[in-house]
Length: 293
Image 1 (cartoon, rainbow, N blue to C red):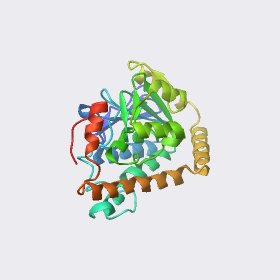
Image 2 (cartoon, rainbow, N blue to C red; image 1 turned 90 degrees about the horizontal axis):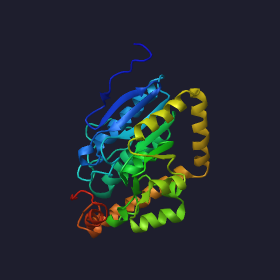
Image 3 (cartoon, helix red, strand yellow; image 1 turned 135 degrees about the vertical axis):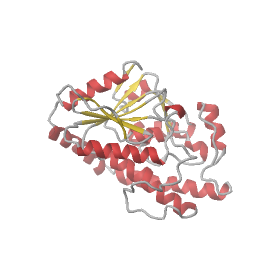
Image 4 (cartoon, one colour; image 1 turned 60 degrees about the horizontal axis):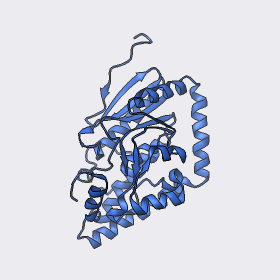
């Protein structure tokens, strides 16, 4: 294969496509655009498989996360989350089939806490290219990236207090938004624009929708041209600084609070995982899909 020939794109599964769009750059693309790239368990494990493939390939210097369609992701597909059967488990968690909060805690630890923290510690630079709505679990999938390139029409929100839950499972809000802005976004369910997200440092660059792919790949190629070991050590230094500041401890503590929300809901709402009233709130505010739990 010549230097100018790249492998054809290949599906990791029915939720994620993997390709190498330019030398030194691998890309995982979410492909559930017909429903706003809602996230189920299969999507998470297929995305993890893409991370593992990029990690094992020494020719890959930079990894890009992208999504087809109008929206990067509307968050979790709550009707299709509750089974890890057939998945390649990455932790030593057990008890996924237990009733009530015991089962909730087990599979949320595996899928939402440990998988996302594993991606945060991916040793190569990661760039997320996002567009449209990036809501709740969509932000969780975006946040492990080192850099974020957003189209100018992108909005970010975590509306889950409307479901009687404190926040999404992978709690990066104070680190990404700052404490008071995080509280405002959580209390109101309102969205942040791409422009404001860049002003506060969460987003790296804002471009037009038409420029999103090219701008992301140009940035990725520029980074990929630098020595891989220097990139790896630079990322490690920044992440270790956040570790010393207590980021992982804070994420774990907030995850426990999130789980308490599910426990409350199961008592207060006849066994429901979340407060069903939240669906009306999110539909009215953001036009999210109608669904049930």
